[in-house]
Image (cartoon, rainbow, N blue to C red; front, side, top):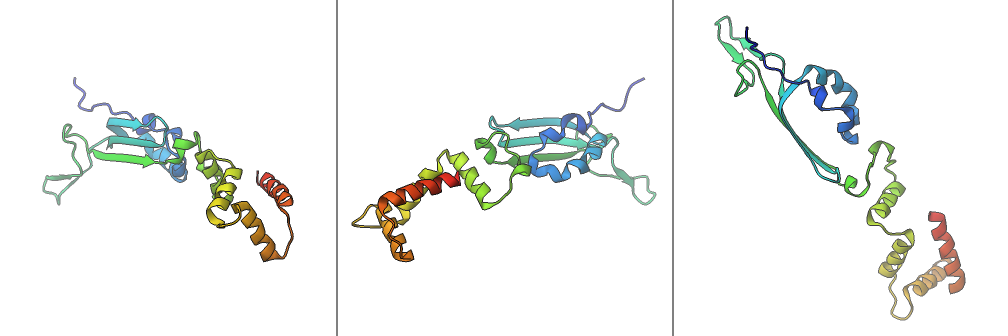
Length: 184
């Protein structure tokens, strides 16, 4: 006695919640029951070393061929018949995702990210590997222009002029250092 049906593993054997990236959290509970009742073949997966990109390809296979008899004629319309196994329907799918933040921050979880300007600023500092002091120094050197004074002296002069203060350079350095320390 021969077995006409080939074995195809359940999709839930291949795809787990841990395999899905965080940005797909919203569908995890919805798809688990479906994954138990859907099967696959021709599975191929590729993920880069940093985990920031992944490619999956497979044919989704329902347990039986999806067909409908046409108006009592005895002829059936088969939805996506498989090219090798005429007893099933198969649906080729490909999934590719890319999340570059994972190249720089291992284990980044979008659910724990607040999406505030401060969170993006801190993320950029982590990715670029620079300190807040270096950012402030670069900003002053880039945006403060002076022909006669250093950029910091010009910034201090501009602050004194704008706010009517009389902060000297030593006091400014101390305040600047304190301000940078409070950012940390």
